[in-house]
Length: 384
Image 1 (cartoon, rainbow, N blue to C red):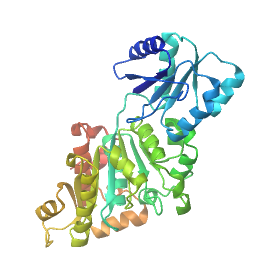
Image 2: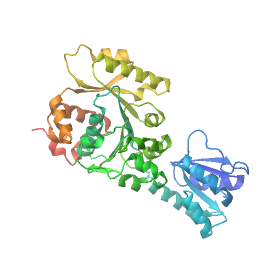
Image 3: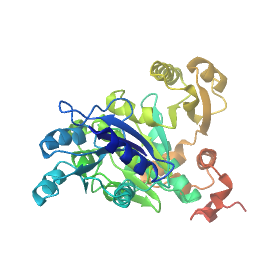
Image 4: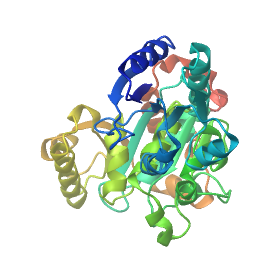
């Protein structure tokens, strides 16, 4: 957890730093200097998880509110001489949930950090973010994202969050469930000040035990409610509460869609073995290179592969200049039945080549593939 202390008193800041550092080895504590002209300091570079505001003055509440609106992922801890009910109410409205008296005890500081850790989803999980994106319309990225999420949860017992970031026309939910979303990404962003693990999960569909899905906005007009900093905050909370966070990014390249690419552990461009797909994949990879992404986190997924294609897998790697991660065979009728019924393909056709490919992808992503037998549907995949 990254913590930044802002104080105009060097000795006080150092005492706070020493106390906070004792809260655990995962605490990365830095000290910044607050001044009368800039009481909240400057937030540059990596945005911290927690900002501790020492000797905070009520007159600076407006500036603090602007900070929490701009960086909703930041959790402020306010240390102040004013602990009146009026101030506490104003602080609450400004997004503050932790207010401590001047010179707080180590126990009080550690308790505040513990509450923030619980709110953010706990510190035990550091999930992987996987971003799937279509190189061209019709690649099958949404099908693969939703069905991979289902296999990771059902066969491997993993906690999986799927976020549908296809803001204009996202329909990921209908691939694996007939449930109607009660909430969606835009509604979460409209209430970003409420964001924590419990609020995020309450906005999601429980597709299966351990598999939760956050639907895309139900109206394309609401896509403007989703901002890059909102996506960053949501992914941070999801990452601390799930083993895998799968983002169906869609095809748009803008500030919002680039955020999951920035944060992803792996990016999977989904391509098919035709020239238009390969040309678009090459362009997309060139964008990733220009953004400074290491190519080690980009892996091509070839969907609807068939052995008699005029274009080989080696041709794709050579042209696109990216490594092949996995292939998924062509099985149109089975996939169409899965999509039309809103049924995960691994449940509908457990022995299909596509199900086998999805299982192989899931196993390659899980740290210990041998633990797959502990999944609640392991018997479904058992061989006889």
